[in-house]
Amino acid sequence: MQHSTLRHRAANSSPEAIVTDEGRKTDKFLDSHTRWEFGGPWGVTAMMVGFPMLMYYLWICLWFYDGRLVVPTSVEGIKPFIQDMWAHIRDDASPNLYAWKVYSGLIFYELFLAWVMPGYLQEGLPVPSLGYKTLMYNCNATFSVYCTFVTAAVLHHYHIFRLTEIIDNYGHIMSVAMIWGFAVSFGTYFWTVARGEQIRMSGNFIYDVFMGAALNPRIGPVDLKMWAEVRIPWVIVFFLAVSGACKQYEQYGAVTPNMAFMCLATWLYLNACCKGEECIPQTWDMFHEKWGFMVIFWNFAGVPFTYAYSVVYMASHEPDKYRYSTPAYIALFATLITAYYVWDTSMSQKSRFKMQTQGIFSYRRTFPQLPWGTLKNPTYIQTAHGNRLLTSGWWGVSRKPNYVADWTMSFTWGLVVGTASPIPYFYSVFFITVLVHRTTRDFERCAIKYGEDWDRYCEIVKWKFIPGVY
Image (cartoon, rainbow, N blue to C red; front, side, top):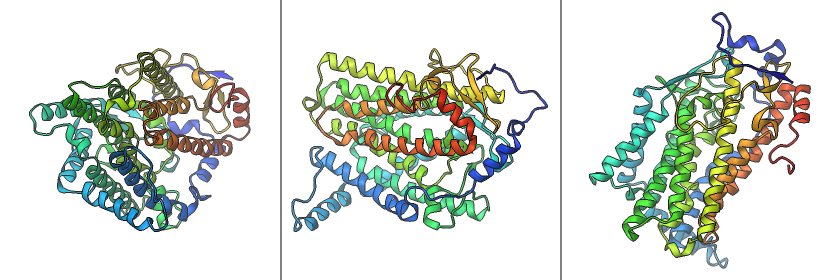
């Protein structure tokens, strides 16, 4: 293993210089369509149809059936059951004009703020499809999101837009979000193909819409993929929690510790994405994942309207159904804070190590900067490809420490309602399948990309997730 040191890039150096000829050949192979994922065209079609249906079903069960998973009790009951489900969607989740104003207003406001707000300029990783050139990212999420907070507070205070309206119109807004997700997915696909900028295509229309055609779509100075990853899903999730808290306060004159927990949990996640936004360009999502339905629909609709089911449950049920003892609350909050610390610092360690490797690291003073977020003289494996594999910090004891911590946080988001309903645990159940699948994809790709160096890395960092367990 070797040690790296912090440094600034020399004026005459270039990002493509660190990639060897062998690495270029491997990158060219990895940037082509070589296999079907997610079950191929039939699998992705099923997901594109099934995701919206599942979202409607779980919301209906939460809001109208006391959080129970309802099913037809007989063959004869299937038709009435479907009719009842459709009636709920028609009456309580129609994409009405009010929902269009609320959701679209947020989209355009966040896009406007991303365009005009000052930010921290961050250089991304060298992109093979661009000849190993790097893109610049204007990281202004902190200014944009906190400006949104102030705007929402003013609108709420002067009764122009009461925040309780979000949870009260959950179904209607969710439907509009789904339409946006489909429209942006197909629109981005056609726009990218028309401009001849598609990459890694399979030749199957539906599959390519799902996986995406564009790698780095932009409108003016705004990188749409990074913008949509933070400014839409986590902003909505946070405001859903705040909406639930406002609704409780109006009903009971107080906010339950459970709802306060969700406000804290969602703020922690959103704030982390904002204050560490300069780390996002160093991630797999930005560097390799294309912007297709898989990412777009989940950012526009899936994340905001499935991850906070505990808020929906608590906003529609009496606090007695999910009350804990004081020691239990202490344990719940402690678990969240501990998992958050590991997640935040592990993400920071990895991203800043990549910046150190590129010679572009600069310490950004946003709140909070946690201890051990930056590694000094980290150890690493120098690969034949030209990249370096980190073997220090959290990454010296686990290959995916961020996934373990991230999933632990997701589990607490369901645990906050205890056994009152299984539906709030959807986030953690769905999330662990996503994380395991992504880990498999990532490790397979790394094995191809790094060869024997990857085997050597796995010998040093033995555990995939939890040290001593797996």
